Image (cartoon, rainbow, N blue to C red):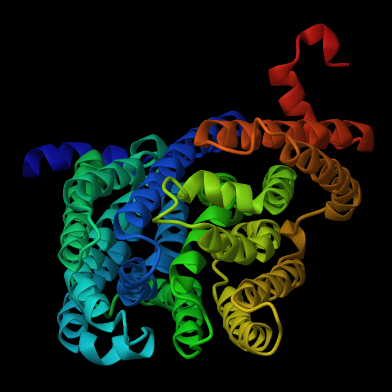
Length: 543
């Protein structure tokens, strides 16, 4: 094995990144397809959980049990992948210094492994104490059991994420794209085997989730075995490149954990207000998973494909190329997330019914309205967080990680304060939590765009205002038409009952909304519509 690794290492260490537009387009499409399948299987996972555990105490406890383990994962691992490991390794490969880059990455990974093992032990032991802060009395005992069983998952997910980060640094997206799909399918199998409306079932499913994470890691490690052969366990913490990597990673580790910290804070607000109905924590999670569907498929895919190429271009001093890549990534993402935000807003209750209400006893109309109300304000976040995701990765690519940290901290403070004000002191109730989140996300997006232009003027995004001036009217036309179509569909007896007519109605409204947006984009002269016309229309019609 050692000899085989030696034969393979020079190829991996001297690997040159393909940053051509055609290659980036193929990789973006691959990630989008994989992300769509991943989101569908992820939603299937959530649907089964809601139907087996039912919308209420058990589903709330299951949701709350993920809060702290997920926060620990994001705090120690999540941000470091995007902010430090991928740019460091991508830039080292672009400069022909793969061995040097791998040395720093190996030391970093070795330290994280040891720290996370210790936190796992501490997290399991102290769960009864900290879970009091984020649960209600009814969910506390079960949430503690879920948290304890789930904590080892963070270690396996960390190893899987690091494997994926290494492969992405080499632009080996085809080996990582479908990993989350496999993980989701394994969790779905666990739900089908053990799911039931009992406390014991919730714990058994949680154990299945942890085992699924282990299998996920083993699969990714095997797929990346050639590149990972360059890893060597080391605790040489005096290495200068490692110290630079840490300086890059630490601010981003904190900023990447803030969205999860937001979830913890919002659940604490829910736990502190007895006026919130039972199942509010579940509805908050459900609404969050819904708005992240288009955002994750489009914005995150584009941002992840952009990042290694942007880092390589910056390392080589090709600033104009980097600026064009960033501008194209923003426009491409926003052009598609805009109509999805409108579709989700107009059809919010219908989307909740279509996804989660498979049996009225497990997800009744009160639950639909609660989740739909929260989703209504999250629709704006689909747009604003598209900018946040891409601009965060842009900052990470140029190794400026403190600005995303600062804006994330401000966003956390705003989300907490505004969410508290809107939910406690207005008639919005739980929907005020998502309004506070959306307002904070908007300010975060504006701040990131402003500071990137200030800190990196040569590589800044250009000509965004003309795009916005044309795209917003197209979205407003779609919104107006969508409301009219929805009222017509609501008045039809055919679409009033049954799951199939319900899904058909939602599908028709969504397709019509997207077509209206595309037609409006053509009228407004948006050039971003042309690639879609080239693929969908015969050549003679494109002009």
